[in-house]
Image (cartoon, rainbow, N blue to C red; front, side, top):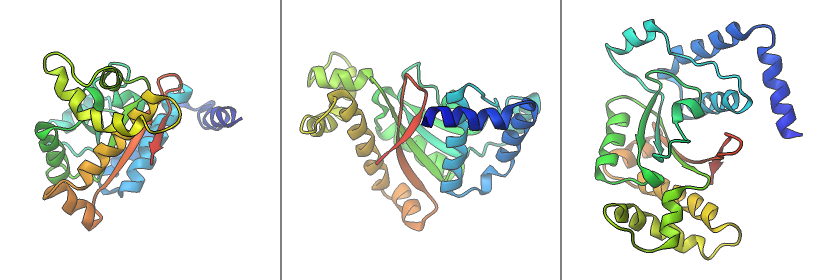
Length: 225
C-alpha cells in the first residue's frame, strides 16, 4: 500500500507535465546554498523518491550549469558512501553537476585522507549536511564478517569495520545487514566527534551528520538511527 501510494503521488505530479516537474527540481537547487541541513535532506529525499519510482528529473546537467561550475562549486551535501558500483549517489538522489561532494571508499569507512576531504567540503565549500550512506549486501562488510583479516590493503577496510561486526553479532536478525547499519552508526559518531573542525560545526548547529542505508532491490534510502 505504501509503495502504491508513493507511485500514485509521483504519477500525479508528473502526469502530463514532465518538463514542468524537471523545471521545478532544477529551480529548487537554485537556492540550495541557503538551505538548512533539514531542508537539504528533504531535497535529497525528494530526489530519491523520483529515482525509486522511475521519474528522475536529471537536474543540473546542462551546458550552462557546467559553465557556471567552472567558476565555483557550492554542493548542498557531502555523501560518504561505499565504492560499490551499484550505489552512485548522484543517481540515487537524482542530483546533478555540483550538487554533491562525494567521498567513496569500500565499506564507507573514513581514514585521515577521507576525513580531510570531508572537512574541506564543510569548511570551504559550505555543505551543511553529511550523509553516511551504507547499503544492502555490502561486500566490504561481508568480508569483515567472514574473516578478521584480509590480504593486502583490503585488511585496512576489514579492520575498520570489525567493531561494527562485533556489535552486530550480539543482535537478532540478518548479520550482514545489522553490521551494515552498525558500521554506518559508528562512522556517524566518529564524524560527529571529529575535532576540531567537524565537531565545532556540529556544535554550532551549522552541520548535521546523518546515517542512511540504500536498498539495492528497491532503490530506497532510509535513515539509520
